[in-house]
Amino acid sequence: MNFALEIHPAEIAFDTVSAGRAITAINHYPCFGFNHDSGHLAYQGVDHIGFVRAFPKRFFRVHLKAVWWGHGDSEVGVFGGHTSFGDARRFWNFHSLGCGDVHFEDATVALNDVGYDGPLSIKWEDAPMDHLHGAAESAAFARKLNLHASTLAFGAAFQKRRES
Image (tube, rainbow, N blue to C red; front, side):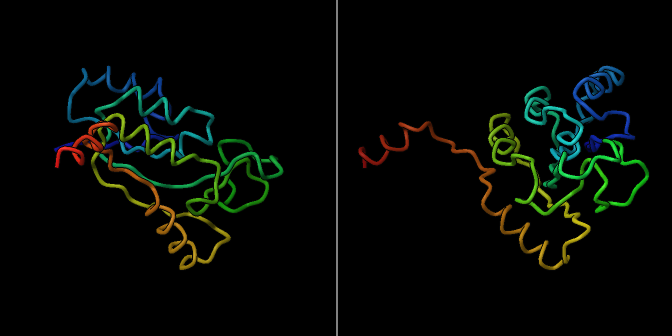
C-alpha cells in the first residue's frame, strides 16, 4: 500500500526541498510518495514542473486544481491571512481548470515523461463560480489534457504503416 502526501503549506512537505527532506527522513521508503497538485506549488512560486522531474517515481495521485496569483489587490499575502477563499484581497485564489495561471499542459508533459499512469482527479474550488457550471467547465478542460504518452517513437508510428 502506498501513502501519497499532498504537498502544500501546513504539511511536512510543501516544496521541493522539504519533500526531499521528508523522503530522506523515512530512509527513502518506496511506498511513500506524493499526491501532486500543481496549484499548491505554483502559487507559492515553486516550480511545479521541476517538482515532477525531481521525484519521478513518487507520484501516486494527481489533483488537477487551478489557481491564479497576483491578480488580487495583495493586501493578503501568500499564506492567505486567515481570509476566506474568493476574498479579492488575497494574493491567490483557486479557480476552475483553464481559468488560472497553472500551465497544466506542461505538467501533463512532465507527468508523461516520468511515466505517471495513476489516477487524475479534478479538485474544483472556485468560490465565486456556480459549482455546476465550474464542474462542467473543469471536466471539459481535463478531457483535453493528454495524460497518455505514446508507446511508439514518432518515426516508428509511420514505419509500422509502411510495412503493412
